[in-house]
Length: 435
Image (tube, one colour):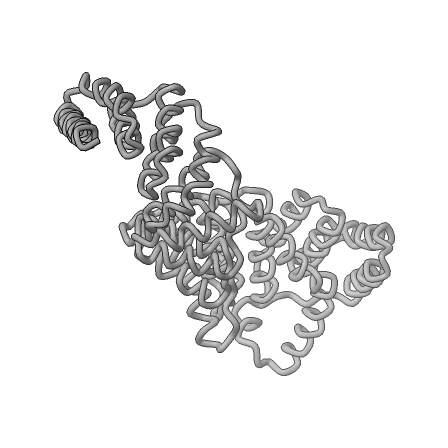
């Protein structure tokens, strides 16, 4: 805000040093031609030649960078007797210019206020002073005074430009008057469109803030969509995706994150993990697994337990237990409990790798901290039974029996083991009798 105001004021004050010359010459022309209604209605007094010469000398000094010389010439004017209102106004106007150049903004404000105290100012001088004063008030964070002065300026200006509307919108923002700021910034946008001028990105940034602060999310979506189409940037895409998620439009949220990923905008670990989680929720586990695997390999995704776990889950949901194994192994090695070892054991079981399954299940039970130890025992018993280690399998299933949630399954396995052991015993006895 301060930078913008200073740039606007600076542009305005570039003409300040020459304002009295232009006004003096214009006044002479108007007096000769008698064509200006402004002069007729206000009857602005003429500037005397001696005053004009001193101010011209002050301007010449200022243009050469000799501000002390300019001050001396200006002091000569201030000591003159019987300065009329127009001469006094031009003197104070030049004082404002000098104060601004010295970065003494309070002094510049005081000088401008003195200009406006003079009667029968030329319309152009009054307009320039009001606008500059509004900008300086805003720069000094005197926002209510800035808004009041700017409204006065709008009252005497027939064709305001976009700059003034933008300034008004910015002041409303500083005053947290978000509802009032929207018409002002929209006026700037509409005016630029009417004039066929290029629209400014900063205008839509401000408009977006107004809608967001008012929680008008449909308008936030509309504004951000326009901004992305005209000034595609990561921040806009991420913000729009967030709004879609907030509004329950998960598919659009995920699509935007995917577009950002393809554009190379997602570089932080959490951003990539968020995308993977969205893809998992959208039932696209294979895409999620590829993004996680690539990120972990190239270092863009942090190698921690949670991310290894997420990668393993993605591969499991993609029905690729073989690829899930390395991620599960890494995650389990970093875990403080045995939950991931249970998942690892299940993946080995899915691949019929019974010895590794039994080892992982034992690790889970040894590590502890399980929410369902009975499941680990069921899994261990299953793998041991497939290895025909019935004695050890029975011990595991009997441990699972202690939990009512697994009792029925454990009893079925124990019956199966008894039946298998009976069948094997009968086979051995039959072989022995034939021998």
